[in-house]
Amino acid sequence: MKKFVDIIIKGFTNVLHFIVSGFQKLIDLLAKPIHYLWYFLDGIFYFVTVLFNIVVKIVMIFVALFQFVFALIVGFLRTIQDFLTPSFNTGQVHFPMESNRGFSVVLDVVGGTGLLTIVPYILLALVWGAFIMKMFALLGGNLTVKGGD
Image (cartoon, rainbow, N blue to C red):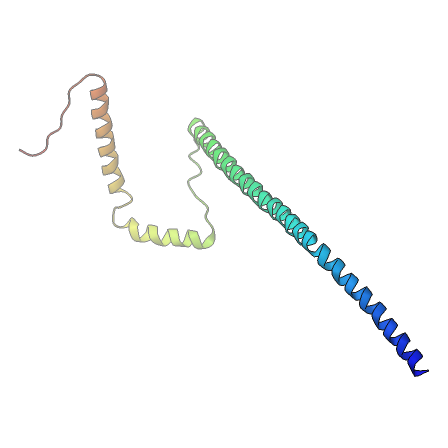
């Protein structure tokens, strides 16, 4: 009886060893192509991901460009509208609370120095003088300004 059990166990072991070794050989046979297939699919998905990121960046660039261009156009049109319809009642600019407080402090400090009243008038006179000289030069006049002796 012992030999019969040993034969059954040995046969069972040989069958299991045959199945395991066959399965191992099948895995070894399929491992290389599956490995290549995995890297191929990984490369495709990586390419699609990078391509999607590039498309998103390009769309973001065009959106920013359109925002910039339309902001320029709207700003220009608002400037033209303000030139055509002047309103002298709106002299107050509304800022957020902290910004308004900061501007008020700076204006209070700078206001007493004449920096907001006298200096702009002097600079405006210089700009108008340069403009008048350029106009005379454009009209054919010869105007030179010399300083000192």
